[in-house]
Image (cartoon, rainbow, N blue to C red):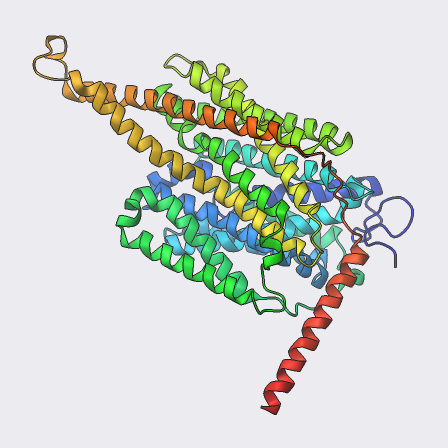
Length: 543
């Protein structure tokens, strides 16, 4: 059987009618991916505007945003099963409908549970629609199915849209109000639905496989564990960590969900995430690197906004303009990774060392140059290197998951683990640790700097106490940031030395299997599950 989407000769997409020029067909799906990626249940760049016009806290909005990432990560395990069950047209139309509903709900609701559930569902469908588009043009991007090349395309789209979405959101709120971003995306999604109905045919292809044998209970339990973990990291400082009943309750529920999942994985024929995926060496290595790297880069979430807004005095538009510097770094990082890692097959060790070296430049720049008089243009270098470093490490270790040697029925489970550790834990655990460290360091420095504020000091005897307190807090914030940047810089240098002293000659050779091969594997798995269920039913009947 010929491979799907490329039956014979030059690349073609049979889902698209022939009146669309063949060369334009792939760009149609890239356009769809851009709309889907821009469409989120909530737009974190508008968090301050939402806090000001609703009864929500910043933590509530962050929780909803991370719920979207959790929905995205949970989808990885079953995304190929859904692709083989429904046509591309059906997947895109369903995703558009759900994302339109999510935008409307998030623009109006002030209920945190509704917001979180809506964003979780939106993340799930956004991932499924992205897969539907990207898998359709995979052979156009890399005819040999080299995933190192494919992931360079994926991250240049995904990470770039994250930066551009923030820019568009802030300027939309600046010229009108934050709700208008939801209406703009609703209009674009409606336009995409019309284009899909006209330009995408309802072809199911040779891939139809029923949704049998999926561990939906395991999916719910894993989602519960991830939600609890994220809740602890986001709300921990607000509730004073485990002193609060809410954090203790989330910890208990999360551990129960994790324990039940691990117990079920010991006897289920096909658990949602198996021990084979959890114990794979490449998955464990990627998890460790993600935790270290994104903790080092967590100052992005904790320091940069406070420094630029409170110390440098930037307004929202100047703050969001910094995204252009990160965007440039992402483009450069993806281009560099494409030419070195994907084409020239540089070693994993070399690329990891380069990413950590860029992170060191980022941390060192802020450590040595952080001050009151930094111009906006001076922030280009650290933000550029941060964007490049993050995208390099993400492409490299996602490629290593493909090259991990896992069979295809287990490989999507490893992607779920990778999505959780890279996207969710990377965005929540590091900021929680650095934020708590900043709180204690700032209290220490404020007490030291404020020691001279007394009635006996004639130089400040007639100064307003509020003015003095503000000066102490600002100076303590700056000194604390510099101190933490120094400690993180030392940790990054140690990490780089460990990487350089380690030995690894492995080079990328991550070839994605043919769609026909994937179909045979999953179809065999479904038949095995059906036979296994029939045997259990017969045993139960005999008893």
